[in-house]
Length: 244
View 1 (cartoon, rainbow, N blue to C red):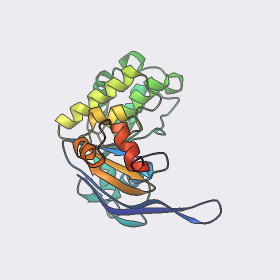
View 2: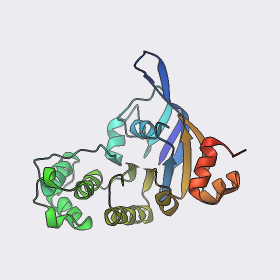
View 3: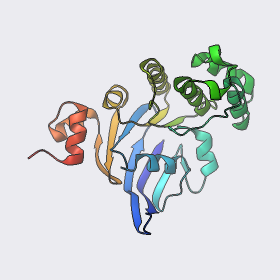
View 4: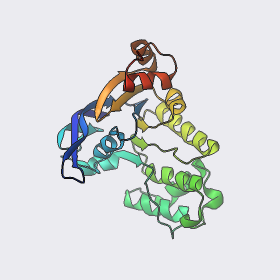
């Protein structure tokens, strides 16, 4: 459902020097599984996800999402994904009901109003459905952002650090939604810095650092590779190397 081969993305630093933000990343994610993308700040996680979501154009390599090439069929890719990041915005003067109805219409939903109403219930938004988004708390805004990302019922979800700034209860609702999505056969690519989230949710893990893949596999496979038990220890060993 998601396939990337040797993806590359270069930027130019303030001094005009090229920087390889993503340097040959390859990964796969299949229907009915959650794949975790782990790495320290600046590892290339968000850049990789933005290329898969067609928000950035790769400088090299290939990628497809739901059978659509990100370069040749970007519109089809966007129709197939629900993309969420810490910078996903809302229309501040609109209410959650208005946002969801508007986005559902943009996405071509046959009955946008009914779809919006269903999501108000699914994410427990109805109690503040008529409040302007600018007046909502961080957790409330994130609930609306999640609902907005999935309003068109996409088969692929790309979630980049979606629990940043959320309290435990809102994060729990997100986890339950993602677990339901997996049971329904959706494909989920999930980035997080919180190792407990990855341990709970992810069927497989891809660890990247400095734009390159360091390791991939199930948690059991990565434990065997590193000789460490806790995912935090596994991650540190992979990124820093074994302690001398």
